[in-house]
Every structure is written in structure tokens, then in C-alpha cells.
Image 1 (tube, helix red, strand yellow):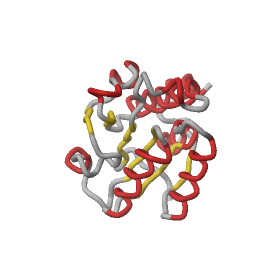
Image 2 (cartoon, rainbow, N blue to C red):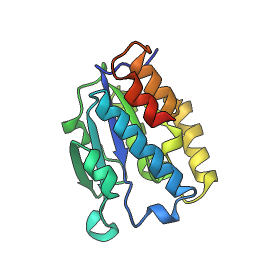
Image 3 (tube, one colour):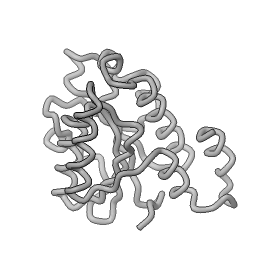
Image 4 (cartoon, rainbow, N blue to C red):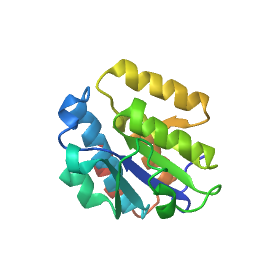
Length: 177
């Protein structure tokens, strides 16, 4: 099964500016998330961002904020509990492309909750992070065991495009290179 722009939605979990310096390889993770969001914009895929307790932890990185059409604050680690389903297309047709921090907490709980609600989940691994790589990797193992697809930013980009004949190919390729 390939990703489809008509059924995909991008969820970016908790790229909070004050948190990112503590994330292992945080700058690269954030750059990949921004690249992913820019590709989603080019491909007309809706983007929702979440922020964990922003009154205490601060806002998302300004680049992420600027690219999200919908943003939501949350207090629970899993965004579903705080209303994420209200901004997503209904399951089971929807493909949720998801990335975020911390992978073993907020990303994991959000993705597992979405799986329980019959969503197809695609975790963009190179745009996910935790304070330790062990915690990030354990989250990926658990998500894969639960049925999530593990992908990279480039995999998502080229699945959304499907062909070099797509009029948006050159714009997306410029972001990938």
C-alpha cells in the first residue's frame, strides 16, 4: 500500500522550541519535519500541529507553526484525548502521516490511539526524536509491532508524487536534495 495525497493528513507532534535542544540530533529532526511539512503543503496535504502544555513548555518552533493549517494545544500525552479526531478525516480511509517528539511519549501515545481508532499510521522516522536514541528506537519497534508503517521523509515525498511527470516534482525534488 502506498501513501495517497487524497487520503493523507500530516500530524506534527510537539516540536516545541524549548524542547528541541534536548532531543538527540534535534536540529536534523526539526529540519526533516520542516521539509516534510513543506512537501505536504506543495502536495495539498492538510497539516495539523500539536503542542504539549504550551503554557509551561512553550510554543512549537516558528517554522512548524507557520506551516500548520491547524494547531492544537494538549495536556495529555496522546493528542486523541484532547480532540485530535475532531480535525482529522474519519477513519478508516484516512492515512495519518505522523512525526514528532518525544517519540516514546507523545508521538507513541498519539499514534497508538489513532491505530485504536482504525487509522492507517505512517511514522516518519527521520523527523522523530527523543532525548535518547534508545527511547526513540523502542518507540519505533512498538509502533511497528502495533501495525504502523515506518517511513522516511523521502519515502513520503515520492509516494505522494508517484511520478516524475507530476507538475510538482521539481519543487519537491528541490526540498529533498
